[in-house]
Image (cartoon, rainbow, N blue to C red; front, side, top):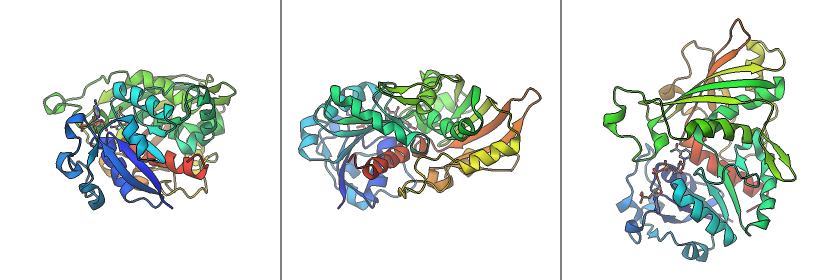
Length: 351
Ligand SMILES: NC(=O)c1ccc[n+]([C@@H]2O[C@H](COP(=O)([O-])OP(=O)(O)OC[C@H]3O[C@@H](n4cnc5c(N)ncnc54)[C@H](OP(=O)(O)O)[C@@H]3O)[C@@H](O)[C@H]2O)c1
């Protein structure tokens, strides 16, 4: 039996990927899509500016855009609702849906740091799902969040190292793709022949959300990891998809380059190992040995876009471990992670 899913914000970059995955999914069935009010009632194919390399699924082309009205959405009896909206809109819609008993997987940044809202990156913290029961005091449904894309990619590389050696400090400098800013995000005139050393609120998100994903479950929800801090600088670069991040970290226990490679490849504490989730990559982290990898164009589709790729692992004279990590921001950092979370919720019998 397929589970019914609705995508809110289905015409955006993340929404389009959700539509694509749900239209081809063994467990889920796409039953509804929404966009801005002026598109309501029109055919999906007519209003969407399709931007994926994969063709638009034939089953969605004639779907009529639903009104983004919570009662109308609830009336369709979806088993799960995915939201991929600007944060200001999402903040209201997610909570209204949860108040009507819906299970929501949400991509925007609202509520990400609420202790009772799991911020999920399944290989890293599938066990955080359990704190969602604390939301019972607020609403009858449940909200699960997809994290900021750069944080999700970073945390996949930090997790095995943290488990094996401990971490005492992290610096990260990101080079983030244009698609991270959405379909209308960055003007061509601003980014051609250029790098922009600023993305609104992005550094703060990386510095907090990474620590939440690596945080601890407590009776009061998730506690941010307080064993180390993350300091971030961010850049928007002229790349379509794929965030590249330069990471500098100090481990608690001594670790050599080969130890770090082994730790990343083994990912010993993978919380979804063997679960057989369709979106789950064989290896969450792929380590490359070439001196000039990872690169966005060459490596972003590793594991169908669900693996992150780590390369240039080295150690300097002061003991800092340095490497680059790359991940596909709209797949691993957004819609792919959203689908993986939904699969996990299904396996855990939450939906
Ligand atoms: N892009 C990434 O890599 C990424 C990664 C992680 C998280 N996120 C987050 O995911 C969310 C979606 O990102 P995106 O890149 O897909 O953005 P996007 O391309 O700008 O798409 C936004 C979607 O929301 C709809 N929308 C906007 N305002 C609306 C309103 N007032 N009422 C109803 N629908 C409205 C848009 O519909 P129309 O097409 O009709 O305007 C569109 O479907 C954002 O919060 C973003 O921060 C993005």
